[in-house]
Each structure stands twice: as C-alpha cells, then as structure tokens.
Length: 112
Image (cartoon, rainbow, N blue to C red; front, side):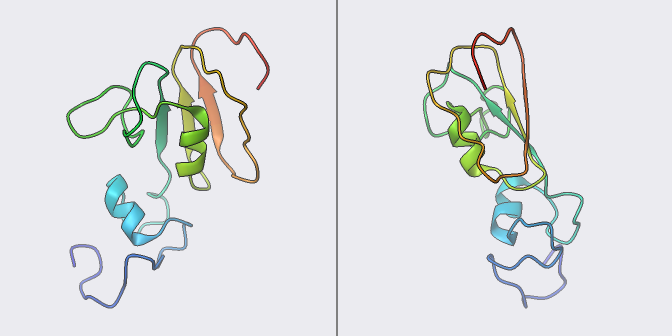
C-alpha cells in the first residue's frame, strides 16, 4: 500500500509499464509506480556460489553478486545493466533478445 494507496494490484501487475512486475520491483527495492526506477545493475562475480541476487558487488548480508553472466542475463529486464567483475567465466554467453547493457572490469581475454 505504500506505493499504490490501495490493494487493487497483484504481484504480476506492472502499472508503471517499465517491464518489471510489482513482485520483482519489491524484491529489487525499486518503486513499482515509477517507470524510471525499474532498471538495476546486476553484479556478477566468479568468486561466489549460486544463490545471490546480483544486487550488490559483494555480499552485504542481504544481497550479493551472481556467479555467472548467464544467470544475471536470465534475471535481467529491459534497461538493466549486467556488470561483470574481474574473473574467469567458463561459459557460453547468450544475450538473446534482452535489451541490457553489459559492462565489465579487467582485461577481456576472449570473445563476448
């Protein structure tokens, strides 16, 4: 009710039209009635185990980086940024039709 003033929307609704459902915006900490707030940066680190949500570059007690580029791409929505931290990622990356920006650190030693 903090963002809508009533209970007329469900978790699968997207009243601001940003392509991110209310439930996902809640999990991300973005505002479901603000179309500019849906995009986030998802961090990827080769030095972590699966299970983190990608919303922080290091584990902060709540959020942490994802372990693979593909995991971050699969969790991303249009307008998001996937930021790849330095490391070795032995995976074939398929960006597909997702409209995201991929950034990184270190030196590229391969093909993206």
